[in-house]
Amino acid sequence: MSPEELCLVVSRLAALGVPKDFIWLVVFTYWYTLGAIHHFEGLQVIEMFAGVARVAKVASRLGLRSRAFEIMFDASHGKKRYKKNGHMKRSFMDMNGDAGFALAVALILASKWGDCLALLAIVCSSFSVVNRGTSERDELIPWGASFRPSVRTANKMTTRSTLLFALVACMDSVFLLENPGGSCIMTHPRLAWLVKRLYCLGMPVFRTFFWMANHGAPTPKRTQCVSNSATIRKLDLGLLRRAGKVKEEDETTITYENQEGEKKFKGAPGLKKTQIYTPRFAKAVVNMVPQMKWESRESIPVANRIAPAELPGFVSGLEWSAWEEAELADCLVYLRKSSKLVIPNEWASVVPDLKWFEDI
Image 1 (cartoon, helix red, strand yellow):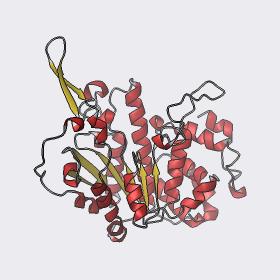
Image 2: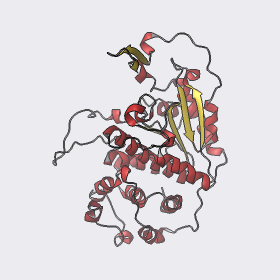
Image 3: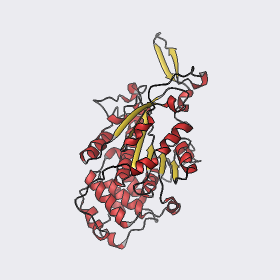
Image 4: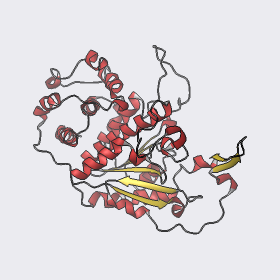
């Protein structure tokens, strides 16, 4: 990304209304020397929460530069690792971690301007119908029972993902959110805000529902996709086609009776298999990339273009704001204290010191 493109991204983020702490995070990530990240320049497909990275693999086979981001790719994931202060050390591919979110931002900044598809299959457990009794989410309480750790974790992940969607839109590229059809994720306040803001700026967001069985899945699985590209409508292949009986190992739920004789159900081992995309679906997603590049989409308007020399004054002049549930302060501290953060001389007088970020 060139300095001129960074100026355009920052001015568009400000026009969109994202919090200033995220703008600082984008600028810090741009300065951060990630070494191998320079080999990622020109990415055309980015798959986050990737599972087995089927979409990224198909894209790579078809000649598109792609990268997958998934916490399970970290060999040390699940092992108990502690920092000197006694806190757990999070995976560098954990979206809710400091290093993980910085890496996610870096991957998007390394993508090809106006020619990238960023697919995020946000963890849906807190937004599913089965979890409503625990999360207590509905249209009137979209934040859910935030006193529960699992709900706070999901809110944090969704808010951070919303910021990534905003960054993708500011680079004239396409974001794609995939979730089960029964998920209430689009009632999340931050996602609803982004959809409304983009619409007000002349950039509609589209949602389509389809049956994953029509893409070769062993179970019907109603699925929804949300994107700033109308091309996603191609994923809907019509009515559910007649299929054979679901195999016992593919069953997604187990029905049982509790001690009071009430009929209950819980997830079966086959439920986790439905998270893995079929080859047919992965190919359908990748085949949309060329059309997404050439389709007509509006760009986020800015009042005045900013020159690189004017960017320090522009950023410092923005009023401080933050989405508290995203917890970006820790991420900013992580980058600010790193020896790999190289601050340009013209920014030295406007970048707050480490203590300022620690006291936020």
